[in-house]
Image 1 (tube, helix red, strand yellow):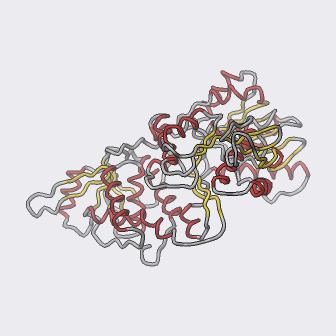
Image 2: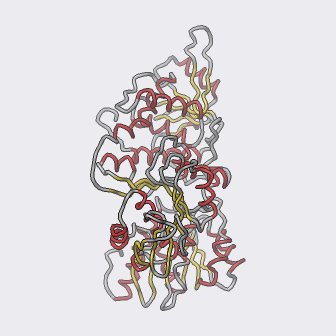
Image 3: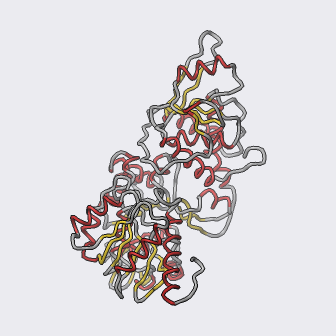
Length: 518
């Protein structure tokens, strides 16, 4: 809150990310300084978080200070950019600017996080730099020492207390919001509904999806049960290696009461073994007959051999394969993971079955939009990396695949090789479409590929039209991009909406009816 202006955590995150893109596009990042010359405002908080997001060090400038002091600070710290309303020549970045989706840099705890100048009362003002580690420790100390409650930022930002008061309020907000009570459950977190907003809304039980970035910075998460479904090459540009990526994911188990893992996935099994503390119950799930202590599949039943009185000699049926929607092996695995987490929380088998039957797939996750001339059109825009796309592609026998966007360094060779026999054709769009086209040429050389031109005014309309021309009755035209969306769209949701709108126009044109989307 600042005056009458309020931001939710989700809004703050979005605005900071937008500004962070602008800073990265202008060459800022770790080991570089970005000055912040803004008055106290919501934009000031956004600017600080944006600088920290990219691993740069912020230099707070108070424009009410004497010009000589400001000139000295700018000369000594030599900031690469200055976030301000105006001035500062070609170094100026204004609040609200943005840029293309960048390659997010890896951040070390030893990278500088801020540069603060002494008062100069005993001589020339001197720059003092603090690391990301030091700032995190200071914020953690403040949260532990002061407990939950409202925070008031009163000190000038040019003192380290000003920074920690401002940022400490964000950290402490979780505990003050948790005082809200409720009686129902909601899915939240990294799926579009912020966990803090869910807490504020009064939900009693939260099913939270957390990103590896959130887990990387987490030190107090203590869930009733936690699961790592799998690990595939993604976000390596940020984490630096698969081992570091796995370590970030593993933090979900550190204080969990039950550790759920995918027994069919080597990484998931390894992460649970390495990161769940000794004595924490570990529950596996697999797509075959479960062992004692696991959930699995027997014929057409989802079966529990973990949360029963005698796991060695008994089992309990939870649901049938027909209860799982959308169909497909990866969704059966997801259902088993969800069932394991629910059972760990004390949910009955009947309630598990009822929940699966009544589940409505989230938008942009394997949602069938329409069937036109015997061809089904499925929107899985949420498949933003090759691993997610693989599950969607393997659920269908004959596919025209719409793919492309930002791969963020991920390889698609293994994906293309594994689904080559299912491909009727491929339609590509986005900045990394040449990478996917090359993989198709290597592993499925007989499959036709249509790479759309970058200048197409309505790329998704063109993609759906091209896919429709390739498809035959019985095929599925599947949007499973295997890549992020921000090179062409504001989000994977907008990308999915564009696909759905183009399909509806195609459907209505085929029926000779005017379309609301035309």
